Length: 71
View 1 (cartoon, rainbow, N blue to C red):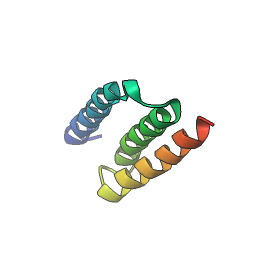
View 2 (cartoon, one colour):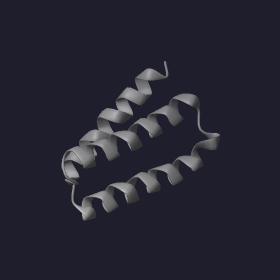
View 3 (cartoon, rainbow, N blue to C red):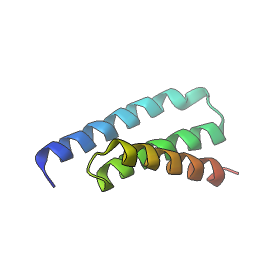
View 4 (tube, helix red, strand yellow):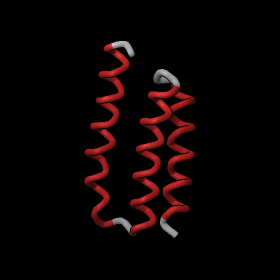
């Protein structure tokens, strides 16, 4: 994996992790949806080499999985 892609993936993971700190007042289902979307976005970005469509698709799928897993 190229160094630039590793740095981008690490930066995205750090940003997602920091943004999850704002989930303190959210419901369990909302928090799980946000976590799923964040993880999905990182996974989609890594698997597709950082493409926008892959990142958005991963976020959408991860959000749905996180939402449904909390029921």
